[in-house]
Image: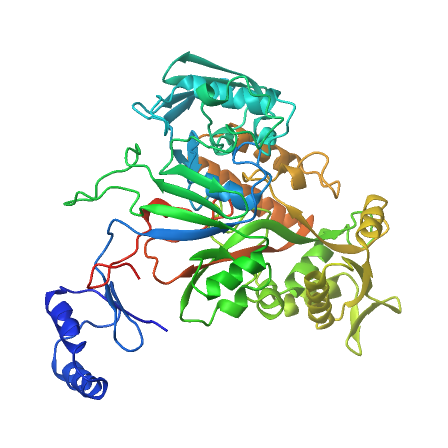
Length: 568
């Protein structure tokens, strides 16, 4: 097992010191270390150089910052295709983002930042967007990247009979043109300020795919990807391996200050093709794979291991309580507020889903830039909840709230096939019991749950949804939402958000929206599920996975060298 020490100081003495002790016998080395640490000026915790000592003291790896070289080993199941527009394999999709790029990329907070497009503007009527493209960008086969490639990609997604997962992103487009090789114009049916985020779509080369009907997604041209990204496709062996190599002429391969090293730092990436995620996790344990996502609800088993790095991120799965708006009690906003004050979301997450969820009010990731707080609006307050219930005519009788001799009791529906939600329901039942609200949990199958909600045969239902890739929450609060909620002021703000292009003003609109929604409480938001990625500790650099891209900033990962110049 490796031991890691992080320090921040000039390394010339320390390097010689550590190199010298390698030649001492183990016992003498231990004594010498103890004396030296007591008497010498040694870097203190909080400094930023990593020293990695293997057991036995044989190899010393000194992290003095980014260095060139080395291979990182990833994982995928067998590809359906290596065409990024049409693969349905999420592991393949993540790998192909190393090869391809979009007009924009999303940062870890979900904000669109320039990539193949350097900038964009929008007309006064908010219906025509103009994207200026980066100059001197070349495909991996040395052909120049132009606006024609962008137009071809967008039209292919929209018009081809073969479905792409990105088609929904382009549903609001009225047309796309290329006035010149460095400009793309996109017309919309309705204004949408989130268009840049929706255009985080891989661009494919027209010269390679023109004429393809994409019905044979395992054809040679669909299995030999050509992109503009930091890594070049090298080879593919069915059920075995995908190999990518660093693109030496990558447009974003900026030089490090005072160095000749350019991005990407790694020489290559090898993607082991395995039957299942469990197989990948087994090979991670033996060191044959360096990076792997963990299975849902299993991240905690890795949290206390010091031989790996774990990073968590909020996914798009949002769980919430749906309340029947026709119920005599639940249609009362004050009563709904009493429920919110009775539920401690953080306690719920920490006790039932520790490390597997993040408490949230709205169906917007707590990590998204428009919210980016993670602050829960209602601090749990059982005394306030009881106060509200008493105002509504309830009195406490033997620990149960009663009105007109009838106990305050509600039925909570939950999917019988979702074990974690059943546990959450039990925790909510326990919390509500503390303020005198009786909850009867009724577990039903998915079709029964759907039928009950559609026909209004429920009090409260614990359900979930997959939120859009952009923070457009009109699906849950706008026209046609599942609970029939309607508020003209909310509708106005949802419309203004679609029109607003100034980031700070947009955040203010979201703040106003959140305030009104938290007064009305049409739903009780609970949490976002989180996913986790585990990494071999030999990898250094910024590892910040996000739901839209788990290998975020991989071009800046690197592997430090040991004293003999070898990679660990």
